[in-house]
Length: 296
Image 1: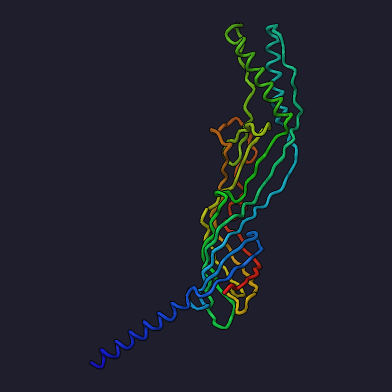
Image 2: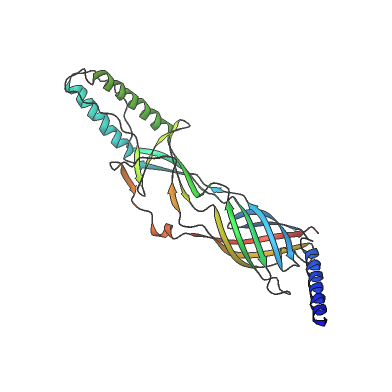
């Protein structure tokens, strides 16, 4: 009987403690603004067990992009070679030559590579020492810009693309006119502009009146995170500062493109295989400084 009373008393004490702890959960709310290697961001923090376990949710939003201009040799040369073949055949059969377009050997390209850092995050902070602001953080970041951590759009200059479309249509019209009508005449079409990168064939298509191709390096959408830091998400006073250092894991980057077509073994190979150094970039470092305001 005494044993049962002791067990009942212990159970009651446990229930009271649990209830008291539950009342402490979510009793506070803090907001933070950060800047770091995952971009700028905002977040909200709440305690789930006193101030020793804290849940955080937030968003990191900016993406970083730059404009790059360069020139590439060879594309215009290849097209001029095909135009000469057509002209030679027209001359051989004493046919009228309406082709006047030629291309410069180099093509002006403009690129806009972008680092896509827009993410949501859900994290749990653990403060192992009651009187210290040192904490361990675990959770995940969630990509909001698709899977492409790094992406780029590449454009030719408008003049090149205009001339390319014009001469391609002119040659196609000649072939329709003479193929089958002139004995021995062979169609010579101006090729699509294809090139091979990392075992995939990309084709230049029209966008905004220019030749265009895109590429990106896809990683996981859900990126597990682990880190450590100092400073509290729920400061003792209204204002506080936090410093965090950690990494998220996003897997091995994989190149993808909306410009990809069926593999063309005759296309020029620009890059044969992905650099080993790029394959090894499976984590992204997180270093941030955060200003925190405790709302209540």
